[in-house]
Image 1 (tube, rainbow, N blue to C red):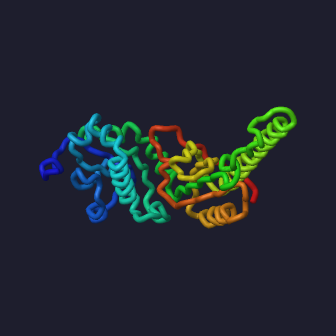
Image 2: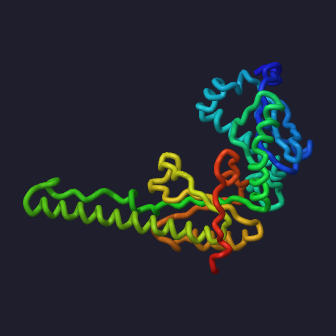
Image 3: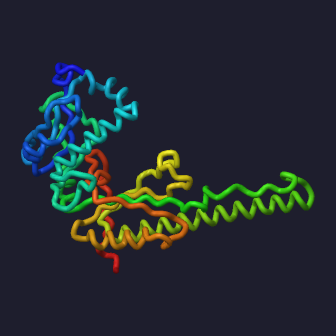
Length: 292
């Protein structure tokens, strides 16, 4: 790509809204989209938007749709977007969103406007929602928990044993069908037990969170596991309550504690799951009313 193409103006890509704008040194050290100009901050009257000029030839509707259909380009765009959101929060590295960062509302990836005035107008139109979100997210972080059925159970179990004559007939056939029925019952019971354990994990973690939300379970093709994902959840946690939450996590994810499932957790993260300005907010759990 030529220097002229990289510098070509056209559209403004907006990454995040905050009340505490990152300084020029912090922005200068963070690359946004490699095809765009330097990161900068727009003052929206008490709210600040971190933006970058990007060329319309590459970020126009059709061109962007084609690029985001290519996995490598999609990953590059997602990584660039997250780097800038980290910079807006004053955090960085793999554990971005830790205590001490500013509250931010991450905007959806590839939020584009035709010029600064359009970006500022969009922020002003949503000001009440953005103000409420920033209040809500202050001093809080997100934790992600994924629960899968344990290997060797549920859908990972081997198929029913074959009878000596296939399905057969007479007593041999009846015995074979009985084994098939028993194996089906076993699989259903194992699946029910795994789901019950996953629900118990979710219920316990909600006691230590101010809000929680469930995402669609990921397919086995995406997870790389042979067993189904039973829970794909995010929890919004007060930084002051982080120790209690992580202790609960450690107990729930301990090896052998819940034999029918395997739970994986990560965090703290910037609370993407609770910061959508175009959706109804996830209700708070009221977890302070739940006795210990």
